[in-house]
Image 1: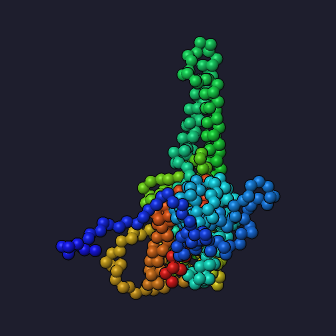
Image 2: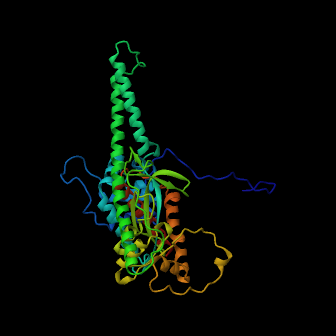
Image 3: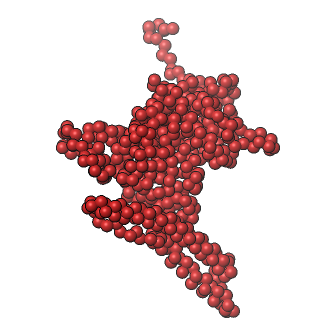
Length: 469
């Protein structure tokens, strides 16, 4: 309505009415709380397809009512897929996060229940990893058979500080220091006029504390020595194999290449370490090798087209030298036969390549691995188109054949895929999901958690791919 001067009436800005006091009526169907294409719906539907008969529950019918295993598994998978790994934070999310509250059915399982379910259901979590890949194959997202996989490892920090570790050399020095301190305390106790200790301290208690610490250090040394014996046995077997190979070459009239293999140095190394918080974890080079962390070595085999993790495992070996064969063997059968395996120089050894290729059905699998470490920079010469080199001679070694394979156009194109697939997957897991440290301790529990992380990553990846189809 205007006024006499013809100027229109100016209204003030309009705001949405926000009322914090009137009770709200949420939709009666909990699934309507979040959008229909949300990840939480996708995970609920995926878990509905799983066989949960093997889940560990209380079958005696005693105690309080139990939470349904399907709900607990869905909540764990959704939490890991969205970067929540602590059981306490997962419990909190059922109050604060609408999708988590929807998955939990407006219930709130406590952190002890969540932690126990995660810890006690390794078989179920392993089965979930396989079933998600089968779903991906059914949805035509994952190619089955004749696949190319890129393998790599990443260091994930253990739930333990490297400062709670002790080396073999230092443990021996500390034991000697503790023995001298115990001797001195006992001498003081024998003197009637000994100088009293600080208030609240007693000689017997101080002696007991040092003896307990000495026992812990002695246990650490025994464990380090046992690890050294196992390492020495492997080194001795490898040395004997090299000696036998050179002897066979000499008997055949061939000239062995390189120097004679040296006898391996046996016994514990002064720098061998034992961690008191998580004894099964190890000190490992992390990042670009410029620092060390108490960690585990998490392995993954990634299918290059879908970028889904088709094989995964965890080891406490500090490097990847012995990891090619077991990582390839960890690829699930649902992915079908493997045509090509891409690996960096850290995985390469003649024995590993020969084992992978010899175990393949009908010799179909070929390994493409860098023999020596190379930088990512490409020179002008590298940019030029090259003809494939001549085929190696019939009696060429595995290393010579691999060098030739990596210089062919097919080899160069295949190897480019490795950096474009498995490394981004680790980047997503660590930087997007935020998984940089295991919550559980011990090698077996770390394996369980890495399977849970890999399954959650695959679900998130699969959800994104299905949305874009």
